[in-house]
Each structure stands twice: as C-alpha cells, then as structure tokens.
Length: 213
Image (cartoon, rainbow, N blue to C red; front, top):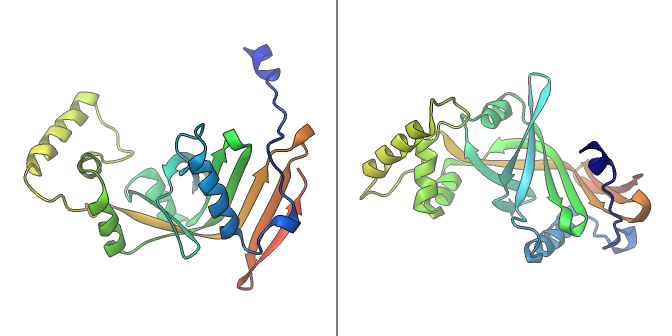
C-alpha cells in the first residue's frame, strides 16, 4: 500500500492561468470554470463543494451542493440543527472548495456565512422532489439513531403524514449564503509549478495577485 501511494504521480498539462487573460473580478472566471465543469463528463457533480467550518478550535469538513450563485454570494441548503448549522451559528467564517480534478482545477472560497430569508428557503424547498422534502422532515441531521430500521420507520411515518398534502418546509431547514472575501483559482501545471491566482475583496473592490505554488 505505502509503495503504491508514494509512486502515484501525474503531470498537469491541460491549461494555464495567465493574468493577461483574467477578468478584474472573480465571479466571471468562476462562472466560466463552473460551466466547463458542468460540461465535463468525468465530473459527476460540478456543484459539489467541500464546506469547512470551525468547531472548538478544530475544523470540520463535508461535501454539500452549491444551489445558487447570486449577487456574488454562494448559496447552499441544509438542516440548521446539523453540526455545520450549529457551527456556523457560533462562527460565520468558513471555506468552500470545488475540486474539479478531471480538469486539473480547484477553486477555494473563503468568506462569511449568513442565513437567507425564510421566503427564499421556502421557495427553493417547494421546488425540490417530494422524496427530498420528506427527507428533510425525517432526518434530525447529525443526531445519533439506534438503527437504519428506526430511520426507515420515521420515513414511513412522514410518508403517511404527508400522503395527500403539500409538504411544508420544516423550520429547522433552510439556506445559507457565503459572502466571499477571498477566491483562489488553482490550475495544475507541469513540474508541480502550478498557477495560483488569488482575488481579495478589500475597500469595496477586488484585487488580484499571483501566489507561488
């Protein structure tokens, strides 16, 4: 195992990041990269992102799905009573990472999270498939449960409860928007001399700098 892992190597040659070709603010570039990731057959979910939050001077990470990019904010939805919800309630600082490995790219967004409005959360909830709506009621996310059978029993209960009804959004479920203060674009290059471009938001404007790999 150790020998196999240490011998894994790949040279990155697919693209480059050169300042002369980059926009003055990061969202144009993000949208271009995101569209390319969506079109890439080897990327199963281009909107999958690793969300990292702070917990007791440690860091928790998990994959969530980007559901909107609006007014320069990154939006996702979750259970407010989950570990990530509780952590964001205590510390709004967070990071999201888009690992578009098939394109030898990644994007890191550092920012602050805040809840979106109840109306916005309800509108999105109403657009979800019924199974996903039911799931939001069934799961007390991050809480311990005795068995899978107990979870399935809760599912049966809510399927009956909402059998012939419009399913309302639970109060414990909704969206967050992350307002970025930094966005870093990483493009793999040959000989591990990768391109790293960092956009920083300061004094109500974006600046751009190159970081060494």
